[in-house]
Image 1 (cartoon, rainbow, N blue to C red):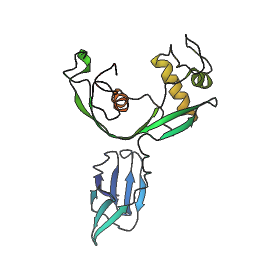
Image 2: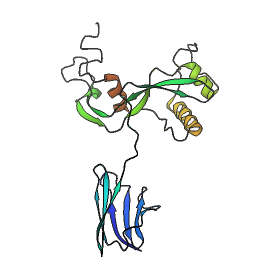
Image 3: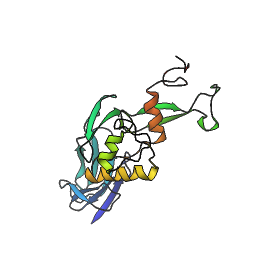
Image 4: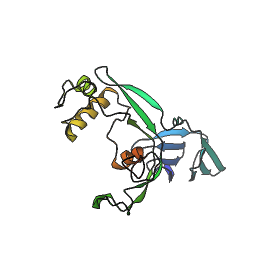
Length: 212
């Protein structure tokens, strides 16, 4: 019997329930529940402190109990850390870790070469770090993974081309089928620009003068 509910303010999909038997937790909006503490019984009220370490306060007829959750999250590697992943077919690919952060997306308004869809500049926050391919995917990597090479200008270490968005999704599905927890996907436009800018604020990542 549920007596109280509380939603985690740091993740609205995480819900805690106060029950006669203790406190339960759902990480999918209430679709399924797991008991997290059986100490406080007949819980009538819940409150959450989402700072670190996260604490759930359970109010009962006998007082208030504090349930502290110790984080088990793995620390992110430093930006620029290179990791090698194995693709289906045995080929490997190097990917670079990009930490979360903020940047100005778009080109400066004073840029004489600015296109209409490149402004105005606006601040974007990348909330989670991610791995990005260090190089463009090669024809050898694609052929090993997909069993074919659609490229027009052939060369095993040349970038693969003649690839559509649907082709890319087929590759991503194959990668994730082989490694379900990897979470392969295409980067967002913001993630791509954030990584390419690498902390710079000039017209190009290499500076304001393209000729230098």
